[in-house]
Structure formats: structure tokens, C-alpha cells
Image (cartoon, rainbow, N blue to C red; front, top):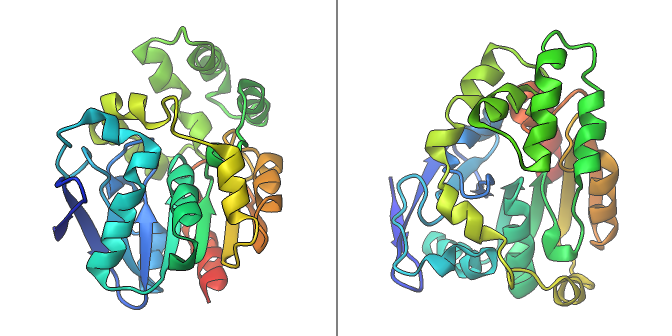
Length: 279
């Protein structure tokens, strides 16, 4: 895998998949290796995907200072990747928790972002987030699923903080729009791909200053796609709509039937939506 050096000396790796104009892809988790993004349901047929392994994940090295796992302290890693690619401005795609990283990058380097696709993404950087009630509301949409009865209580324990490892395993289907062999295969890598210690630091106190980020992006002229999954609990479509309202040139798309990984649930629909936005 190609690699570059972050400002603090940490070696960071990235994968390149496909051909065409580059699209920098930031993985969520938080702190999950980019392997789970795959080729984003075939989006690599439309764009050259540059998939960053965040520090301490995948093929990237762990930093000497673990406090640099904090989201705001990874912003300059993204900037270092842009410089490595010799791009004047970039198209960004951020999934899940990486929505925060992408927004902080845009707030610090607004002229370096041409477009931003936020895929089922968080926006704590702007002061918007989902709640346990949102999670349970989305779960209730799955009442007719054959696995619902056995997974419902486990899912509740995930969000009240009492879950066992077995509960986490049982609750996984709620994160997908449909629980089939493709979803099972995708979910199987989650534990191995995630740096849990880094994830605990990612959104730690001091990571976000929503008022400052909103002010920095108030006049931002980049186009933004906020893509939500109809069945996703984090964020629910209406929460995603609230994020879109805070960005001057944002559009909302809700993928019917999708959960938190819309490129797994319906690859063709996902790639059409994102490719159309990117133009």
C-alpha cells in the first residue's frame, strides 16, 4: 500500500481502487480500517477511490502520542494526504463517524474541499447528533424481520450500556437494511478492523467546538451531499436533514430500505446517487 508521513511523523497508509478523478474516502467506526468500505458498492467504476487508513488502523502506524487519535487532531492527516496527492482541492466522502473529521477538515481548510459526500454520517462537529431514542425508533421499523424478537432486547442493552459481547453480535442486523449473506460477510470483519482504544479517544472532550465550526462553514461554497439510510438509527433521516440545513449548499438524499451501510444494502442505488452528485 502507498504511504505518506503525517506532520507528527506517523506513517499513514492508503489504498487506491479504480480509475478516474480521485475521491478521498474517510472511514468511520470510529477508527475502523478502510477495508470495510471495499470499493463502495462499485463506485470505483466511476471514480478513483483513495481510501485512508486512519492512524493506528489497517496498515497505518500507531502514533507515538495516543492523544492524537482525537478527531480534531487528525485533520492535518487529511491535509497531508491532499498534499501527497498533489491536489489543489479534493472531493471527499466520509462515512459514519468520519463525518466529524470531514467537517472539521472543511472548517479548517474550506478552500481545499470541492465536494463532500456525507454517508450516514455523524455531525457532532456541528452540534447535531442522534440519541438512543432515535436508535430504538429505527429498530422498531424491523418488527417484521424473522430475527427481530431475538435481537430486540440485545439491541436495547447495547444502548443502555449493559451489553455483553453476545448482545453486540445479536444486535448487528439492525445496522443493515437487510440481513443477508452479504451483510453477514461485511459485519464479520468489524472487530478485527477496529482500534477500540483509539475509538475511545476519537470524540473525547475538546474534540469539537460546534459554534466555531458552524461559523467557519457559514459561508462555505462547496456542494455537500447528506445521504441517510431510511432504516438507519444513526442518523435518522430527519437528523440528517437538520445537518443539511446547516450547510449552505447541501442536498439531502434518503436511500430507501438502507441501513448504516447503504453500499452493502443496495450497491447500484448507492453508486448512482453518489456518482450523480459528484457529476
